[in-house]
Image 1 (tube, rainbow, N blue to C red):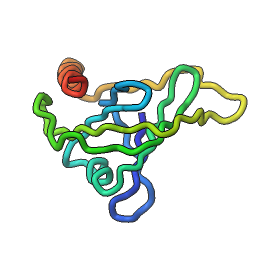
Image 2: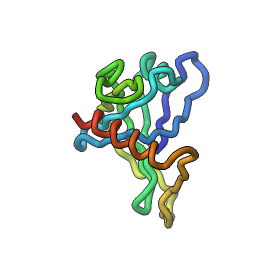
Image 3: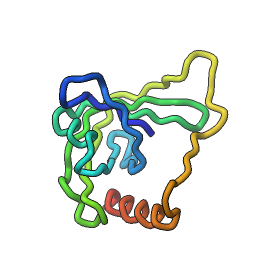
Length: 128
């Protein structure tokens, strides 16, 4: 997924590839990010965001406001901030007459086992 934030320094919008995202329900999405990241700095300055979600044949934008819930999630193995995105609008943003025919794919560039273990810990911390 991609998360679009307002730049804390007044520059153009920033786009961040994110993976630790969980939909709590139709009105709330939880996400975790490293406290040292530009993403966290941007969200602290301005919580307005758009989450871009490609898949299932289409592409959607989820707009809302991200609120800091925890500076550092105690159950996460890294110093990760936890944000709650209050969903305000969901839009289908595929261009007319089109659909996605393949899901986006990525490769882990370090240990797949370590990545799976980290993801499991972070997702468990997000869901608690």
